[in-house]
Length: 346
Length: 280
Image 1 (cartoon, chains in turn cyan, orange):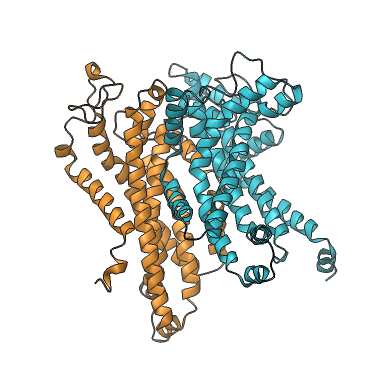
Image 2: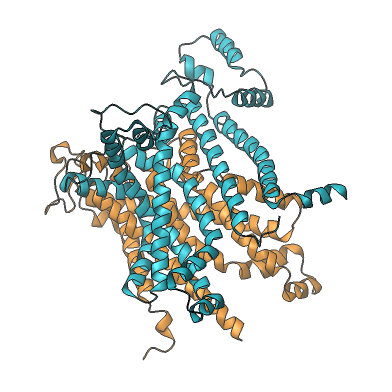
């Protein structure tokens, strides 16, 4: 079998990438199909919804023709797919801008928020888990377990409100929960769309402080609620490895504790990567609530507006972009997973 | 001293059961416990802080928060139970079938589940409720889309290992047909992980319902629902009016926690049972 021979001879990294990329295409096709069907399932005739109750039957028939509704479902899907491939997600009747532009405008706000949130969530989760395993049976260990258990029961939107109340209203420590930056300040010129990074590029310290300050409460909210899951997961993986013979052996050889921890952590990496990617994907949806509370102006808030306005085209665009994002995150995680764990054979 | 009962009298189990009992009392006796109507607005009493008449204060519309929290137990738990029951009714048989008859059909069903689960839960929920209409049953359907694949997956994994066991071969030799093997011999042995998952799922359902209602894609006013109640107090929180959002949020935490505790205890019981079986 020359093909199989050829495949085997390729570098491992290349094989992992090829398999993953080949899987993305059908998955994206499926996502597009679902986003399309979701809107097709809507009760009522879109032409009548748009033109209103007083439209004549002729004008509705004409409009149906214009929208392509007179064709069968699969032709419509083909047209939709073609449009999506050309970057056309339709136009929102509420912002009267192409939906793809709306989404591109708002994406950096959400990405900035969830990226910082994931870094802190995973960092804190791992830290708590490692300390509680190393100090097994201590008060910290008990506290960490209780936290890991309870965190899953707390609604994020409620935590956000409590943080706003205590840290902003009562104590006045945190900045106001209105948007990503002080409105009195000029935003830095857009390069990445991440206000903190753009402000640094522009050397604008005041803008940086404002943007970073505004991030504290929403990032803290997401971290508090989600770090528990990371803690729980890391705890079970890490404690198992901590009891492994190689750790006892390292200790017997007099390897410093810090280095043992690093080696044990390296071995617990694969499940941590998958749980982190899951959280990153989950946050895109969960950030909807946090964004709403902090008037963040990101994708999540756009989606909420779309729901409230019954702006189905915008909602469809959001579902499509969000699912594509999650698909990409999961694929990257799978690739990393296979890279860090050489035992997985491709 | 307690010899055998020590595993039954764990604090987690007791707290979980106590919280669950409180919720059932609230569900059954809501009209007698609640001093006010849960849906009657009274603008003259708007935003009263907790006092002797309104124990937990009133919201913007002057509705009594304590009464609403009590009645909301019915709405939230009804949604949670209905969603999980429906998901069990669909997911468990599907899991058994897919696990028992492996093959193209089963593989397709599993890929389809993978696919549904790759959507962001919350986004899918928002979109579906927007499409189906803001009714309690729309929320239940959204939750089912989430739970059916989960239960089916768990059952399938169990069935895959059980079907290779000798007692299944014995049943087949004694002339049992596929249906009897699947549902009388395999299913009862595959239920333990499902039962553990049921309780957690009810908690998840309550959290998700509350989240959907919070952003206006779930249950609608004036229905009493915990997430909706938190949402109605969200604007006032900044102004220092804390009671409107605080108490219903606490209700969510306690409710979800009670189901999480029970599931944790169920898991522990299952583990002990398995260990005993292994030792035998």
